[in-house]
Length: 590
Picture 1 (cartoon, one colour):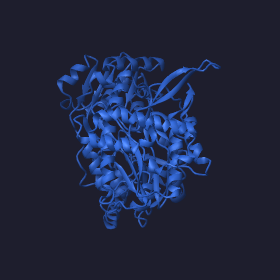
Picture 2 (picture 1 turned 180 degrees about the vertical axis):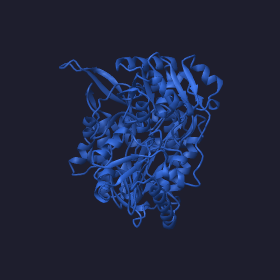
Picture 3 (picture 1 turned 135 degrees about the horizontal axis):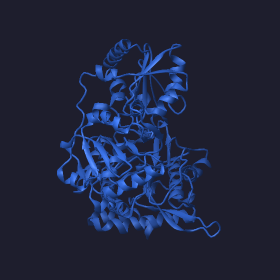
Picture 4 (picture 1 turned 45 degrees about the horizontal axis):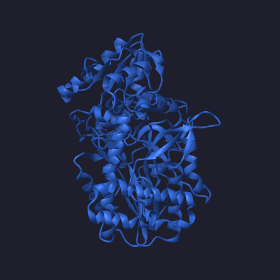
């Protein structure tokens, strides 16, 4: 995007805001479904600013504007945002409300689209003393003349063999949760919650196989699903029995009238302000509580666990084939070549459906950008003397993967080996962790950071996030991060991805997915103990390891891991790739 085109967009938006009688407007990354990934028709933050990160917010005032995002995107903001048009800042240090309070004139009225913000977000602005005004229509949409059409992909059934529990039984579980909260209905506004609940998948947005839609679950185990009926085939409808009513999206607001005087569960952290306003207008009694499907979805049942194991062996074979190819082509390729070749190997599997997110192939200084995305303008050619950080994942018909490996191109420096090994120690600490039921994500996160903290080092992202079963690669479970207040539970699948980033030089991240399971009882407290099963099987680059920094138990873990990699993957590899894998990890399984 050129500066002149962005300036014109800002001019057009400011003219529209003047007509609405507001002094500013907030443009979040989120869409009407509060998703991390949005369809092209809802990528408003990118349209107005050129910023492509998966988290952030823009504020446009009458004479100034800003784009804010978290620490993962500090470098990306500098690269993508035109400083003559927008200020930038770290949203974990300066919130959008803070920026508006400082910059806007006293008494300014700030407009917002109530379908794009949660009630808690709006309250956070009001708590800053700001005057907020919900607008009946989004003024940005009005000036976005070439806005793409909304998606409307077909809906498919997710087989019971992988889902493990029928939609009817899941609806009964949700009904039980509603009764526990003394609620008669619940708004289900997250598309991945609906996909899990009804055992359906679709392709309305990149990387996450969901249908953008809303639903109302009822205490009697029925559900109203607001989606174009033409998208839902007869076989899918048949799988619901008589428990699901498919209704036109335009009927949603009218159906709120049926909830008059009823207790309706609304998750005010994950549902838009629009729902809260309209439900109150129609006389519903609001219960603010967490979406009841989230914890049910996070605890993977045995069928989901096995489906994810199968997907990871398949993915491990594809990534290992790629790594062999990379070892033979290190000096003739770019970051974009790497992305394309890796996807080619994955696509060879008939179960492949999509990547689970945009691949991060960052060489040298690009690897220090936590959520880097290579473009024709930024893609580096690989050359001797630095590191390649490769974070990627796939959506298969039975499971979702997410893996990061960091590889040396040429001979790594002493510092690179030291930092790589510290990150490996952090990874091993989480992978080997045993802990009592009730242990929080923040406590597990600290295990990972300890080896880096000892050297006065750290990383500006969480250690792990939840992952769905052929669903969202960033699913809610216990967050392994300093803010992870919820307890880890058996059946949860999370990432284990500590890192280190030297701005302007290189980045290191090592990521596997891990599954929490029960592992005995503590003799002293009687509490059940949990441990992690590693699901990802892909070799680490041993040329980056300083074995002098590993203790004997860490060396054993690494040896056992590489033995497992070879045993699990070798049946799916051709002879040359199998030989390559054997030689690559020989020091660990000789």
